[in-house]
Length: 323
Image (cartoon, rainbow, N blue to C red; front, top):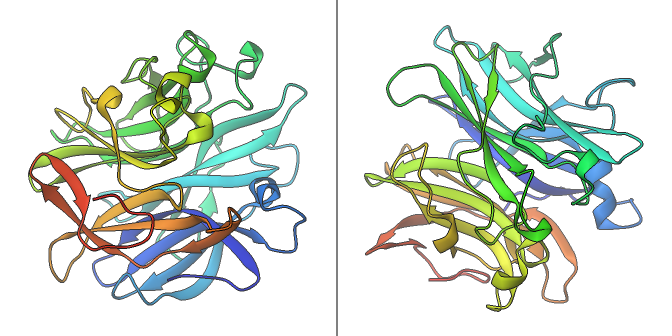
């Protein structure tokens, strides 16, 4: 488990430099009056590990910028990839408050060693485009959902792709969650396009997406709480948590309507990473709900994950896990 006695820890993402695993995580002081206040105080911390279990905290990655800036309120979830020239890119969500509410945009920082980071002077890279995506002006949601960039290389070698937590500009307010999409030839310049999925699949938002090929099969991971699913899906009794959906490729089509839960709401923001020692896939998530319903704010120990017939499942019993 990764825990900070003075701070809540929640969303995170991982990188592997071939020798150590790197954990990038959101954190905020436990001195805040309410756990939900953490979102507007989030900074990005950093820890390293040789085994995905025992972590050593190192210097922080970044904090919010001085106002006015696209990230002058907080820095939120992202992903890290390495350019062929050796440069590491960290893509992240910048948050600012406007008269209409919380606006989310995407920027990046670079590093030569994963420890020392510099924000790009061209930030922000991307923002919600009303041609395809809901914006604050629509007034349909509690914020402008345009965040959690997941970046990966094109499978055919044609540049890079970014998946984005977003909402469509049409459909029922509780059922507009989509996976936004952008492309880049070089990681520095990006072109936003229409979403890869349609609204009406049962989710108000699909948070913290990740796509991987697990044992030869493409799979999409995302997170959504019961408070953010559609009324029709809520009627099934779901508690929300980490979900998985089948796919035909890393770019879809994705079977969002048939998504299944990996965890209940005691675990959230699930990530998978290949374990170098075993070559197997490993699942991590943060502890969200305690038994009394309070917020926990720690990252749980890793668990193996694998296909069991047609189902993606965690390989060992644990609280909050569906098999």
